[in-house]
Image (cartoon, rainbow, N blue to C red):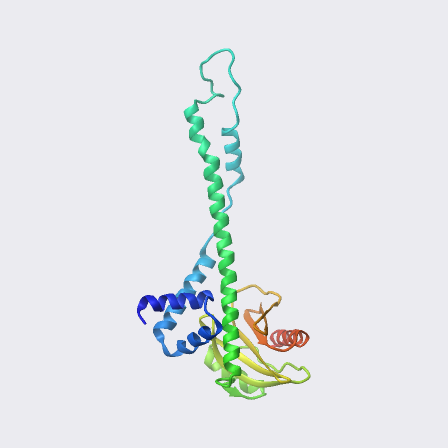
Length: 264
């Protein structure tokens, strides 16, 4: 594959334009293809820079007042055909006439930029949801469910902390029918993350967590391809939870994961 094809493939992967099979294929290649992984990381970094670095400026009220005064119609002079200060030459009027259009175009451009940034943030969130789904499906296929198999959080937490560079909140959920299976190091949003694995009845639950700078937020729920997801930020950590349990069980799982983060 040449450099251009690799770049286009990485862009499609980051933008969420690939199907689940292609998404899983790219995910499987990332650990073994440094060039592809670097291209994906650079694309994600560019999106992050655009989202966080762009600024939105509102036109000041003083500018609107000045434009209103300058464009106000002047009173016709009945005593003399000569021009007065209240009646500027037509050339001057024509010169100022384009200003409202320019202002409107500027505001439209700023609005378009704001819409683009909002779309970019939504697109990145959707892409992260696709990555979470792909990782969950891959783990449940039996390829790589846990790195450390233990129901003791005193065993799992130090294992993950030593390999991730941060200390994830780790605990049993305390729900009926719930078993803590262990944890693994996974890869989301261009960085290693902790994946805590639970079994709820006959269903697997993956709870991903990694440090973030977003303000605390309430869980946002979604459903995709038969799986339920929830994500939120709390105490400097990003959380994504995914499973195919029913809605009531999933709500209970999310509530339990939130309690583990609060009580860590």
